Amino acid sequence: MDNSQASTTDTDIPLYQRNRYHYLVDSLTFVDAVPIELESRIHDLVAEEKRKILEEFNGDEDALLNSYIKPIATTPDHTDSTHVYHAEVERKAQGMPLQALDLDKYTTYTHVKDHNQRRDHLRILTEYAHDAQLNLEALDRYKENAWLSHLDDISSLKTRLSKEKAKLEAEIEQLNKDRKVNNIEWASKIRTLIQEYDEYKSK
Image (cartoon, rainbow, N blue to C red; front, side, top):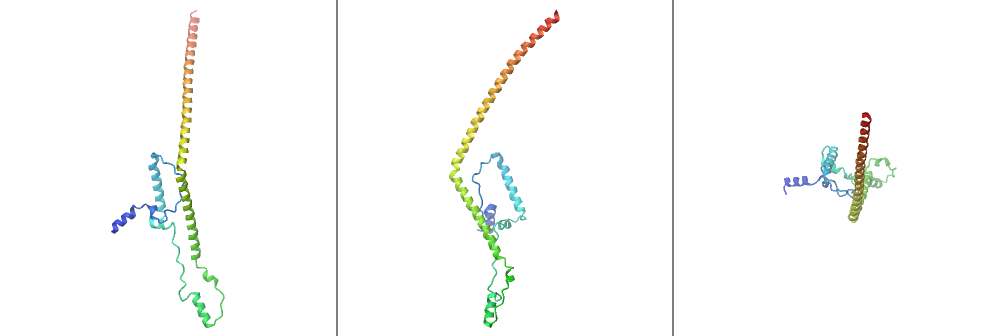
């Protein structure tokens, strides 16, 4: 494979998969279906979030990927001739007395702390991976029952709404009938009053 094909292949790989630890991610127990009309908006929000994250690293994707798990610092080399071991061998050979340990000499050694931090970080990622596995197993095991229960709830809601709609329509229809009857009654009363008024004026 030539360089152009290799670069094209790297470009086609999604950003999150270019991180060799991309499988160490958390996951939700259930993921609701996204309405079709919101898919484009959600894709835009995700793209905007990725862009903002990438901007924090000045657009350097390699720096972003390396920030997830930083490499462990190199352990100091103690095999050179200046190491305390060789000095002690020389002292013993010359019969010199043992001097007090210089504990301050080791205060600059940070590799132990660095290893502990990396170990704790890897432990956290391992716990997240374990939780993600449990969530996926729960999803695979209970997804059918969960969705059937969800559909039952929707069907029950639809039935209740249909009954409420029919009840409201019946009340509206009865209200309109009562209003028409009242209009007819009051129209008859008003005509009667007008006739009585006209008869009274003609006397």
